[in-house]
Length: 127
Image 1 (tube, one colour):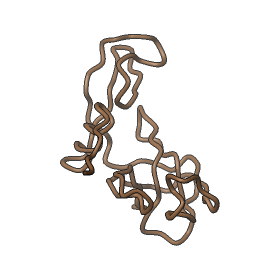
Image 2 (cartoon, helix red, strand yellow; image 1 turned 120 degrees about the horizontal axis):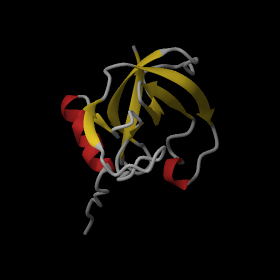
Image 3 (cartoon, one colour; image 1 turned 30 degrees about the horizontal axis):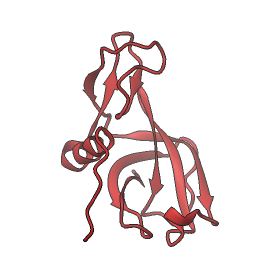
Image 4 (cartoon, helix red, strand yellow; image 1 turned 90 degrees about the vertical axis):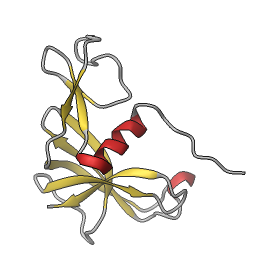
């Protein structure tokens, strides 16, 4: 018998990205974070409100993983990246491109699956 474990907050974010583009959490001081956080990491505020995630982000850094841990063993080699989406940064897998993206490349965020464990993951595609 198998079942899918749900990670509150994070899976809610993935659901939202699949449905309508996603969101981030903003504190009254303008800092942004992504679920499952319940406290602003910059100022400690617990007053977080949902704001729409920008449609496009920008690659800050990317790297190709050739030797992966057990969770991503069958995915290797794969590219992972950090992208800036305004008030938040997201880390995800890069799909749909044979080349490693460069800093400044525009991306959109979506949801894909890992090959090894068929788990949902944040995925960036070059725009």
